[in-house]
Image (cartoon, rainbow, N blue to C red; front, top):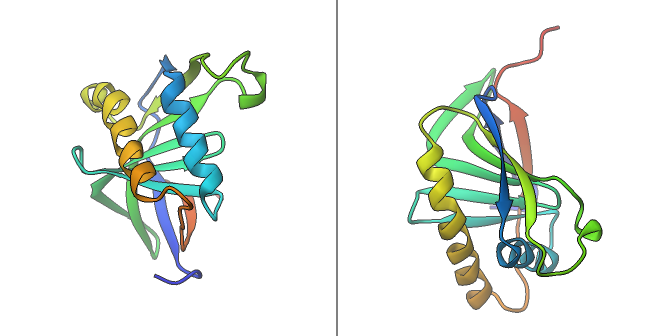
Length: 152
């Protein structure tokens, strides 16, 4: 993959939202890894779930690696869940403060995946941290698009 490649991911219609609390060690490790990255995003494979996490500054996207969709002439993987911290990192009172998040579900019957993500995502990040201590390289851009094209 070259630096000019773009990976496309689609967000289907929102199915359900809920509030949750992201543990501080998960949030902190995600941002430590992102700071080491050479990009504004970082891919974390979660092999135990066949998911891919995309970490961005204010959002965590979780992609089902087996779900594929097309919109017009463009194809890409489907995002099934996203986590959106409710406050910015600089508003936290301490590094041990857990982060309240809004969780968006882009389909039904994925509550079990959400429950498993709380553990599996952290474990997957630990593996990346151990293997790539000095820097993490991402050699593509990310395009996250709504699955439905906007009405013209």
